[in-house]
Length: 131
Image: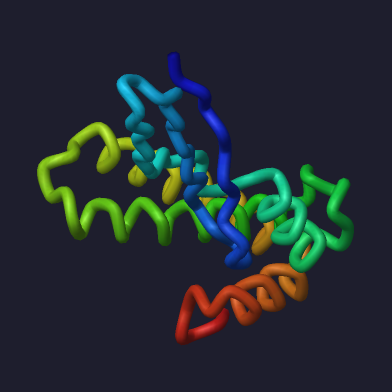
């Protein structure tokens, strides 16, 4: 019989939870095994932090600036994944779709309010030349 006990990492913005499988003693022996289980790389706390920084408030998840910042962090994560896994074509397709969504939001900001566009470009350091 095994018990599953979560051990949460104390490091800030940690992406992993370690689970400790503790087996009850069988023939006077107990075993301890650690497995690292990958959880979602963007937790709700991290998302609310992104929206609070770029969207104005943590609850303001619909702002274009917050969405662009979220897409940028997801794009950075997927780019790092694709550098290690060059033949992961499903991730490559999702990355291309995400870049297209970010471009559409940036085009919307450029058309609606150029000052907000310039502010988010500068805050995220997306482009060298600002229009």
